[in-house]
Image (cartoon, rainbow, N blue to C red):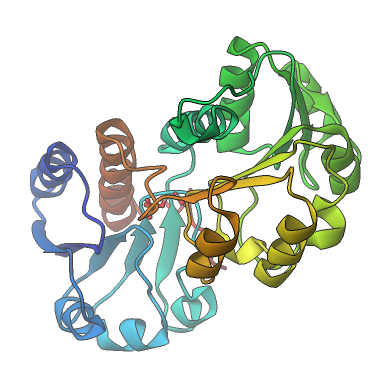
Amino acid sequence: MKVLVATEKPFAKVAVDGIRKEVEGAGFELALLEKYTEKKQLLDAVADADAIIIRSDIVDAEVLAAAKQLKIVVRAGAGYDNVDLAAATAAGVCVMNTPGQNSNAVAELALGMMVYAVRNFYNGTSGTELKGKRLGIHAFGNVGRNVARIAKGFGMEVYAFDAFCPAEVIEKDGVKALASAEALYETCDVVSLHIPATAETKNSINYALLNKMPKGALLVNTARKEVINEAEMVKLMEERTDFKYVTDIMPANHAEMMEKFAGRYFATPKKMGAQTAEANINAGIAAASQIVDFIKNGNERFRVNK
Ligand code: 3PG
């Protein structure tokens, strides 16, 4: 039984050691494909793999077709928009994620990016504080919950909107639940995005929504670039010189954003929200143990495809 770790953005070494222990301890073989630059390398590596652990690596119909022995793909992380679920189902491949395992890391980065933005990107000029400001958490999943917990420590007033999470669940965490995205953006000085990229959410963060935010607004994106309507973001930031945008997922129009909005816009060079030793260990080892439990016992608890 061969388990392949295919990570264009590698895990910390200590996480790979933990994955190896889990896989070899079960009597399986571990193969590593890290920092690959061509899709061909992935297509070759998956040829004899029974199981694959990935991060944001693309597993499309072509990759699935090349993986003749494949039984399971585990996305070590939360979002699985990088996997073609229908093609996996058609190929008889189980797809899982590892929910919650890297969420604290992403939440800590979201707060770090907020401080960076309100302190004017650490340029030494007088900024503002997070204490007393209204934070809107857009989607109250594992990351959103952690953002709420940390933001309360900063003394922020925390609000959330989640189309799928009942208000009682949100309020139990000491967070004010709002009934719509519009209400969240209207109410909050800072909005932190934690929605997945789906057919419904892609391009949904648009001019009309963002323009509801009060003066001096800040949008923090540690979710997905696809949820932003990039052309409308440009229009908004041209009109609203008070508006700041910081993102952990570099947009397609990064060069234009830098040129037009330097000082109000920042993007990390590579998505780094989940890039901590702890998150790599948690998500990587969870992925390995889910694979072992699936192969040995048929456990499909974290399956995300039908
Ligand atoms: C996730 O969906 O888990 C995060 O976006 C982290 O993605 P990464 O594993 O590519 O860093």
